[in-house]
Every structure is written in structure tokens, then in C-alpha cells.
Amino acid sequence: MFKKVLIANRGEIALRVIRACRELGIATVAVHSTADANALHVRFADEAVCIGPPASKESYLNVPQLLSAAEITRADAIHPGYGFLSENAEFAEVCENCKIRFIGPRPEMLRLMGNKVRARQAAREAGLPLLPGSPGTVKDPREAEAFAREIGFPVILKAAAGGGGKGMKIVREPGALAQAFSTAQAEAVASFSNGDLYIERYVEKPRHIEIQIVADEHGNIVHLNERECSVQRRHQKLIEESPSPALTPELRKRMGEVSVNAMRRLAYNNVGTIEYLLDERGEFYFMEMNTRIQVEHPVTELVTGVDLVSEQIRLAYGEPLRFTQEDVQIRGHAIECRVNAEDPITFAPWPGKITGYSVPGGYGVRVDSGAYENYTVLPYYDSLLSKLIVHAEDRATAIRRMQRALGEYVVEGIRTNIPFHRAALAEESFQEGNYDTRFVERLLASETGSRRLKKAVEETP
Image (cartoon, rainbow, N blue to C red; front, side, top):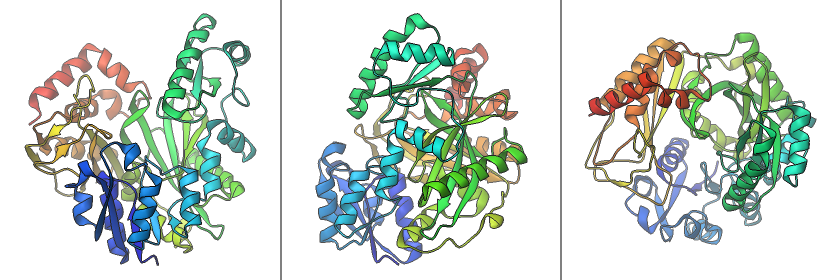
């Protein structure tokens, strides 16, 4: 097994990797910016190295500094976590060239899935179902309109080089396409330094379903069933659950088998997530693939009993999978709420010092967090404060357990979106499992939802 792993990340995911390494008997190295000197991942790692000033591009995205830290501490592997350099093929290649194992898929797989157009082409060749759309990028609004008329409005323009809602525009009629193309292209250039766009049919009421893949270096591939990620705002996920209330056992089996077969054809390795849109008729379509550990991986861990981060490390070392598809069973139900440092109504980031902090506990409650009392939420990074996850024997009990846990969660000194989560879980459509990716939009627009959210703000400790 690896002797020492450097974690090229920060916050709760850095802590998560440190814990997995400690249980595997592996020493850890934390890296940090000057602003993160007092972070928990720095405190709990065996060693820590400062790699630069607060700005991400000068610290957590600074490849020479990361590699220097790995070399001086004699780390034999680097875990990238999620975000930052986790899906950067060039970084993975440099690690391998320096004889440092990158804990993730091979560089060529990162490169393939990192470009959305190439990923779509690979998915089609591997047998994954795709929404009708352009076979490659579209060079201008006229070409985009020709494809749009062919596949039918509404359509959606997407950045070929990225995700997370950047460079993404819905177009419902021909007259709006030119302006949408210009706006999407500008966003894509600003976010990814690449203005390439592609177009596909837009599904009005989709559900966002993802399949967790685990693959070793010996040709063994299994899926760990699905996660439902439809509660999102501007394509940023807020609540995830497993199993999805939308899937029948037959559909779950079909989605899993299709995903595994495709990954076998691509010779995929390590962990990864295939993301699908599920339409009103129960048809599913490949959207993208994330070649890293997901933020929402804990819900899968709780319902399958598989430690995904430990598995990721074992697979990177070359160990074979220790279980088969027949061993994977769904046990109960899990829900995750992403607790962000932001205004619960406007969603504006809310950095600052936490003056009081008390996390919920009790049976079936898990909190993955890098926060503590007197910790300062920094303005330089993502606003994710923690992940609150619950597990119960069924979905109804899991919802009640999450409501109880949210009511116990105390964060003073800054604002968080805990009231939003309390309002969302109280919505009838969520409790019935009858929701889609426009759930948040409808909640905020409705009089009942707005009133419930304001009440939750007043009642949150």
C-alpha cells in the first residue's frame, strides 16, 4: 500500500481523505494556502506544507508547488479530492511522470471525459443513450439554429469544455438563439478559456440521476446504484438522496447494466459517476461523466456500506475489487444536505467568522465538515461549509431524521442555507418524491414556499 499520500485539496474533502488514509495505515500530507493555515485538514494531517497565497491559482491550482510539496515530503501518491485539479489530465500526467501515483482514472480518461463533445461521442460509441443534438461543436448561431430546427425547440446550448451551469443557455424559440449563443460563448470563454459550444434537445421536467461506478485495473467493474440530484439551483446541487424515489427496480437494473457495459468498453478505471437526465416517460440520457469522487458520495456509502474513498485509494494502488455486483445491496435510505455559507433567501455567499458552532448527532446522522467555532469562512473558495447526511430504514424516516438534524444544527456569526433545507424538506412534492430539477425554482416562486422559507429563517437557531 502507499506509504504517504498528499491531499491536493482543502476543507471537508481533505479531512475525508485524511481519515480514510489513517484507517488504511497511510501517512498524510496536507497542503494549504496562507489563509488556510488554521484549517482542520492542516491540523489533522501528519505533515503540512504551505503552497502559496490565498488565491486558488497561486496555491491549490499551482502544479509546481504541489509537486514540490510531494517531493520534499516523499509522498508516493496524490489524492486530488473534487474540484481544483481533480479532473485535470495534464496534472495527472505530470504526477505519473514524476513517479507519483495520481489517485484517480488514467490521464487519457480524464481528457476524454473532460471535453463534453468528445465525451458525448465516446458515450455514443460505448452504447449510452443520448439526447438528440449536434454531433460536435457548432461554430456560429446559424449552424446552431439549423440543428435546433432539426431536433426541435426547446434546445440547450452547453459549453464543450466545462459544466456547473457555466456557458449553458436554454433557448425556446429561434429568435432568441443568437443572443443566447453569444452569452453562452462569453461565459464559456470566461470560465474555461474555451468558447466551444454544442447543442441538444432540452427536457422540460428532467430528473438528474447519477450512477456510481467502481472499476479496478484488472477489468472488474461494478455500479453502486444511483443517486438522485434533482434539487439544485442554477445547476448546483443542494440535496441528494439514494435510492431515487423515481426509479423502479427494473429501471435501476437497466441503468446500472448500461453504465457498466459502457465503462467496460471504455476500459475505465477507479471511481467515476455517469450523470443522466431522466424524462417524464422514464427514458434516460447520458449527460456527462465525472471522473473523480463526488461531493455527494456519502449517500452511496451509507446505503451500500462501501467506503468509496478507501476503495479509490486501494484501486489506485492496483488492488482488485473486493466485491462483485451481486454483493451490492441497497440498505435503507440516505439523504444529504449541502450546508453552504450563504444567505438562505438570496443565496449570496456569506463569508465571516463563526462565533458559535454545534453539529447535530444521534443515530443515523453524519456530518462531514471542516468548520468549527471561531473558524473563519474565507471569501476565496467555495461556500460549502459542511455536508449533513442521514441514514434510515426508509425514505419517510430519513426525511424526518434530516428535519430533526437540521433543527439541531447551530451556526452563529454567519448565515447559512439551513433554513432553505428545512423549507425544501417540508414541501409536499419533495416528501412524495415527485420533483424535478426545477423544484427550487418553483419553491422560491410560490407564495407557500416563500412563506415557509421565511418562517424557517425566523425559527433557525
